[in-house]
Length: 604
Image (cartoon, rainbow, N blue to C red; front, side, top):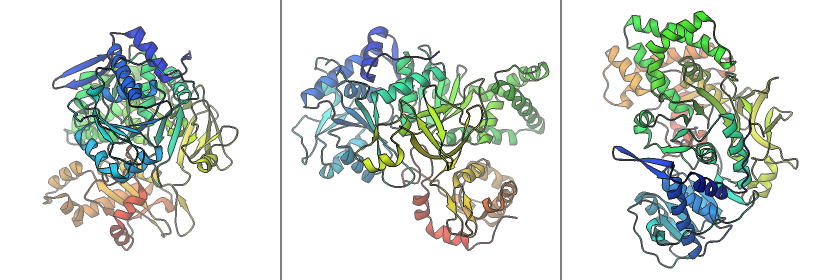
């Protein structure tokens, strides 16, 4: 049954929910050892006061408000304050460089930047001389200070504390339409300058309607919010969609406390990216490998039965009695421990943002973790498709949402059309015309196939193709997925444009590698020593040969280099959803790449 949202704007939807749900919890965050809940009424009142203060400062419908903060209740309060006065919200990642931050603030012409934490406030203050339109910096953190002072374009922005708005009388909602601009989200991309994707209230509400229906989300559900709210996936699916149904959102404290937060919150829904699930898979396997032989055999038997049971579950069917009996046993002895990592209430573990390897998906599905993979892009609002329980096709990203049309261009590029497709790129009409045709079809840039039942399989990025000197085209993303499925490889970047064969920069999983070194009595102290050890290199050569055996000749990795330091967002080598920025990594490791291609081939 589809859901219909009658309101024209997200602000009006929030206002209706706040009036109806009042003292029910809406947002939660952890203080010390306790989780503190904020009710719908509290959030609405705080947003109304900030809205009134922003209006008093001279903001008006159509102005831009930037938010630079980790996930927290204040993010939502400022977002609702801005949306409610007709402003467009410009979310920024806290991890991007100062240069990119300045570009986005100037390109969007943001007049207010709401920041959380002294580091973010100082970052914006340091840029203030080069910010053309910014008038005010609002410190969102509880202890943020600052005195109100005159600010304006070309002058130093005034610094304000969020508490400066506490005495305001809450202001009413702006009455906009579904065509009103709600947000400009700058795509991180793996190449080129960021582009501002313009999404209207109608785009976002349409995506919420279809997403809530697809995953049966209701007011009794609770989400643990972990991915950055600056990302369209978390913003729409992890914030606006639960808002639309009256659900609860709890904010994780960060990666280091995520496992504990999952146990404490016991969410019904959790949005994540492939890398986190790969880490879970590798740690479980490493624990099994170190266990006694009888436990390893028990685990292997459990995975065989679990995989067979999953095949029936994917089709919405019950498994035969003998498989069901085996699952009853292994559920208690093996799978319960894996399921417990995500909490006992979990109904949907939704993976997006990048391609999930079939190996990781199959591993979790066999253990009865309710994993589904979806697909989307910021320009589409963002969710396009998702695998559903009982209608799952491994190796695909599922069926399109109910209000989304998909088709294939003659060259195999996936085309998307529907009410959630963006208005266009901000101030970039020519680039908008390149991806949006007059009939409303969005060119996604992804090459795909669609089977007879409508399941979409994404194969590669149209523009992210390596062309070998012999003319063969290779998808580096596909090969990187193969490489990182190896428990001893944490990250990989495949290179080889205009080369005779491919090469790979590999970041070892150093926890696994240290265990191997200890077992084989290899002395080491630093990661750099492990990466340069001749026996370790031979070990990786052997593992690559095994991977290469299942690849076409032109896809085989011919040389490799072990990197002793992880690719990171701080060095701009990863996007916020942890996809590799190939050109940046190649620039940082040019010497290693040249050295690698002078090395002997490892393929057989």
